[in-house]
Image (cartoon, rainbow, N blue to C red; front, top):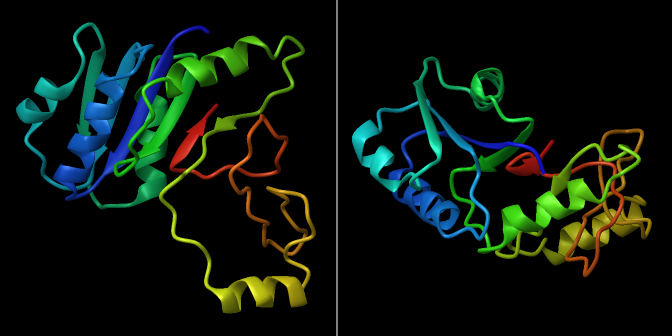
Length: 174
């Protein structure tokens, strides 16, 4: 895989962000760059100490707050060929970046739009929501389906690479 930049938008969630950064530092394949866009007031030097050695670091403080604007700023500032967007509370498995790199390398036809991972600590949907989804055909059996009316089906926890219509914004690589 060519160069990869990790972009994290954050606001006033220092402990969660530190756990996220620790999981990046523990990766079997490190990113080339880490871009943090802060809508709050984090201690930049404390952040810098958590950045793995050899990884370029960019910090941008911005106002007013807004997740989409923060991600867009991070994307414009990043220099990597591939951009991995993480929510500040995401904790990656130690081989996550290595595994998504392999998926992009195997895409010889160049048809891959993006890659995500499995969010394992999500709370399951309440029983009433699952029943409602069945009644209104929001779960037609294909994981990650985006319906014409704007709803989408759950991706679940696949045991292989699956083709989906959408991926979660807080754990996505393009």
